Image 1: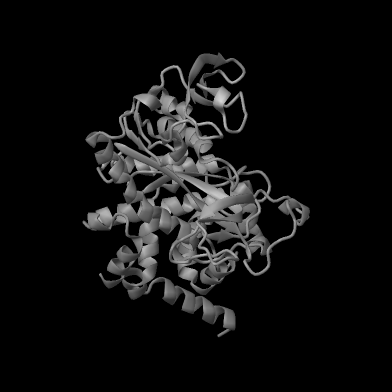
Image 2 (image 1 turned 60 degrees about the vertical axis):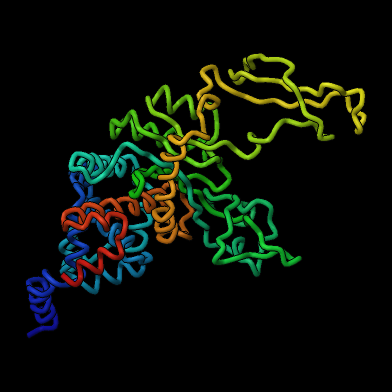
Length: 418
C-alpha cells in the first residue's frame, strides 16, 4: 500500500470516528459555527469568472475558529492541517486542495467588505431577539484599545519619531492615542508616581452591545474621539436591527449635545450619559473668579447655540485681565440639560452599564494587540470576536444554561464534559 493511500485510509477512519464527532472539542467548535447563518453572504466572489478560489464561508469559519481558540494565523493553518476532518467539515478539502496560506487569509481580511459581516451579525441577533435570548431594551457603547506590535509600544525602547509613518515604509492606519492603566499592571513615571494613562500606537475599537453580548464594532485610529463613532453604530442598530425606543447607556466620554439629540430624535430613544467632570464645575476665569452669563447666540458656521460667560468685575482682576470669558455649547432641543442625573430612575438604569465591563475585558483579551496594518483587517477580526460571543450565547440558551450567556469559557468546559 502506498503512503498516499495509507494516509487516505487513516483520513477516512478519522472522519467517521464516533468519539471524534460526539465527545471532542471539535463538536463544540462545530456547534458554535452552526449557530450562525453564513448563507446571508454569497459564498464565492465573482462566481464563474476565472478561478473559483476558496469559499468565503470557509474562510470566515476558519477565522471564527481562530478567535475561539486564540490562535495566530500560523497556528490556525497548522490546526487545519493537523485535523483534516475539521477542515473538511468547514468546507476545505485538505487532501486535494490543502488549506489557505497566510497571504490568502491576509488578503481576504484586507479586502473583505465588513458590511457583509454586519449582515451576518444582524440576522443572527434578530433571531436571538425573537427567541428571547437578547434584550434589546438597553444598548451600551464603549471602546477598548488594540495596540500595534511595534517598538513604539515597548516600554524599554520608546520610539524617537513623532509620527510613526516616518518610521514605517508601507502605510499604517494606526496612530498614537491614550489608554487607561490597569491597576493590576501599574505603570510608574520617573518619580515613582503611578500613571493613570499611557500613550500607545494602535487602534481603538468602538463597540455597541446589549448588556452582556456585543453586537457591532467599528475600528478607528487610536487618536479619534469616541463620540464620533456612536453615530454609525446607532445607525446600524436602527437600519439593520430595526431597533428604536431603547435606553442608550454610555460613559462621560460620550457627553455631547449632538449625540443626545441623535439618540432622542433619530433613534426615538433615551440617552443615559453622565456629565463630563468639566461640565460639573462652575465656570471661572483664570484668576478663579466666577463667570456669569453675558450673551446667547447661534454660531452659523457650525450651526450650534452658544452661551458666553464673562467676569462680573474685571476691574479688580488680580491678573490685570479685562476679558476673562468662557463658552458652553448646546443644541436647540437641549436634551442634555433636561436629563435629571440625580433621579433614582436614571441611577437604576445607568447601574446596568457595569455589566458590559466583563464583556469588554473579554474582547480586549481576544484582540489586545495586532500586527495588522489595515484598519479593515482589524475590524473583520473584532466583529468575528463579537460573533463568537453571540454564537456562545445561542449555544448556552440551547443547552438550557442561560446563566452562561456571557461566559464562553465556562460553556466550553460544560460542553466538553457532556
